[in-house]
Amino acid sequence: MNDALPWYRVPVLWLGIALFVVSLAGCIGMIVLASQYPDEPVAVGSERLLKMPATHQPSSQ
Image 1: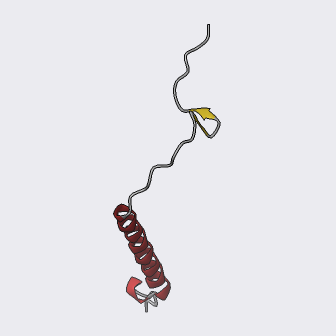
Image 2: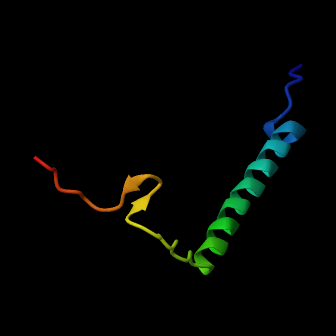
Image 3: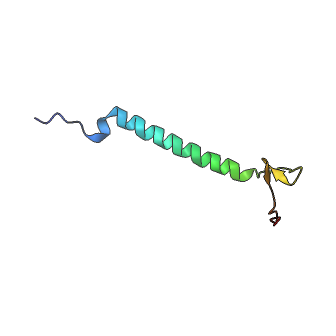
């Protein structure tokens, strides 16, 4: 007699499927929410951003 359970009778598999579906729905929800609220541009106070020049500087040779 074969005592192997069919795949749909394994509770851990259903838990994994449920976690995957909830995670996928959360990702889609975050994408939808992010697309509804545009980012405001960050004001740059000088020609440098994070100690790097924001524009190309000609070489002084």
